[in-house]
Figure 1 (cartoon, rainbow, N blue to C red):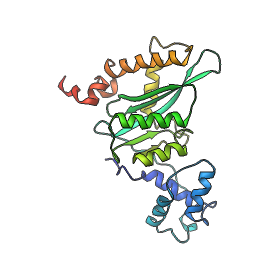
Figure 2: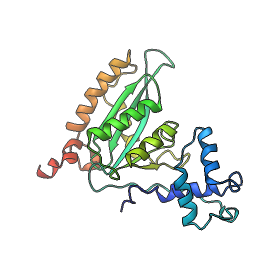
Figure 3: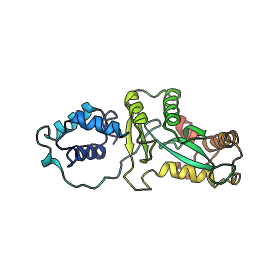
Figure 4: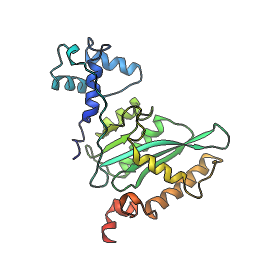
Length: 246
C-alpha cells in the first residue's frame, strides 16, 4: 500500500519532528529553523509542512516534551504498476587516468526495472540531477501526485535543488536510512549489471565514449535483457504491458 503521494513518508516526518524538538531547535519557531537549515544548505520540507507536523503531534507550544531518541525505520517502497516508484542513484565511471571520473546518473522504475532516464557527465552535480529528473518526468508524462522517487542520502539526493524540484512536481521523496547501504537495492543491482557486462571497459577515454557505451547498454538492458527480478522478462515489455501477452 503506497502512502498518499503528496505526503512526506512517516519515517521522514518522524525525523523532521525529532529535529524540531531537538535541543538545538526546540526553542526556535519553525520559520527560524527553516531559515537556519537553508543557510546550511539543507532542505527537509517547507516551513508550512514543519508547522503541520508539529500541529499533528500537538507540539506547537512546548516542544521540549516531544524530543525522544528513535531509530530510523526502513523505507517502504513498492509498486504494482509502472511509473509509481522510481529509484535513482549516481555511480562513478573510471576516466582516462587515475582519479579522473565520469558520473553515471540512472533513474529506474522499480516495478518494471526499466531505465527510464540516464545521463553521463563530467561532474557530480545537483544541476545535472535536476535536469535529468525534470526531463524524465516530462518525457514519461508524470502527473502531479503520481510518483515516489527513492534514493540514498547522497549530497545530490538531499540537496535543496532536488528537494524543491520534487515539491514543485508534487513528487514524493523517499530516502534510505542513514549509513545503510542496502536500502536502495534496485539502483545498486542495476549498476552491478552494467559493470559486469563483458564489454564494460576498464576506463573510458572521454565522456562521449562513456555516453555511447551507456546508450548501447540501456538499449540492451531495456529491450533484450532477461531480468531475473521480473520473471526473466524484458523491462520494456513489463513497463508498457506487452509482457503479459508473451
